[in-house]
Length: 333
Image 1 (cartoon, rainbow, N blue to C red):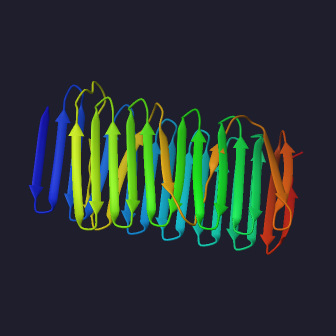
Image 2 (cartoon, rainbow, N blue to C red):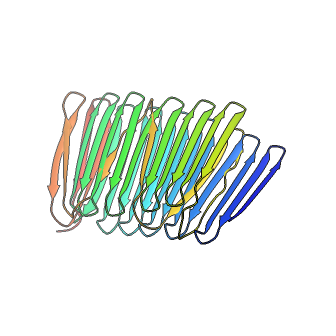
Image 3 (cartoon, rainbow, N blue to C red):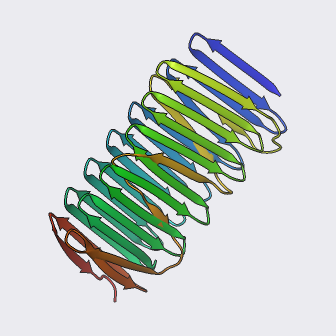
């Protein structure tokens, strides 16, 4: 085992190398700036988190299952992008004030979903071919609930938006991914659990306060970071019982910024992200190649029930004030 610690002014660099178990840990802290990078071979996990003031950017890349997640949050503004190869799924969510734009593209099953909601205006576009998808959209005033069920890849998506409240839950079997996002005011809580390599990450950010907890079993590493105002407290506990693979951590903090890079290629992992106030909730699940759509509208509500077992179809739904129109187009057979 080899441990190196370098501290100069506000600058701290920690490098831990443990052969046999093959562990490398790097910590860099300068001023209020923190950057954390964790690399663990074999499991291959890379996570990047960037936070500045109300601004947060999270990128998760998971090889094998090929998943990339990007979260951008600034004030009332949220942008979420999920790319998952193999199943070929790309999800983009943009929420700012009363404005919400959701885009989902899934190749193979050939699914493209676009949702635009601003004030009383809603536009929904769904294109699906033999992927067999069930979609439910409920909109009333500021309230929006969206449910998407698509078998095969086993994806279920539920979106609930009422006032400023947003909750997002993503569960994807096969690669075994669960994502939960709850946003309220300046408060953000992020939990990442990854079995196999056994990694659990918890991030709590409220105002100037940041608490980060990283637990990685196998190598048995627990990292706790508490930052409030100009105050930073870092606790690192490492228990070396790792027999294979490599990993390294680089943590750097300046002012209100921080970044985390985590990458994983196999096994299981789940992410729990929670944020409250002015936001949304989604649960996405995919199971077979069938699909159905159920949409209902009464007063300020609307409802549509569409089911299809093969070929392609495209739906364009638009809502302005208390009216809405639907354009359904069929491209094959």
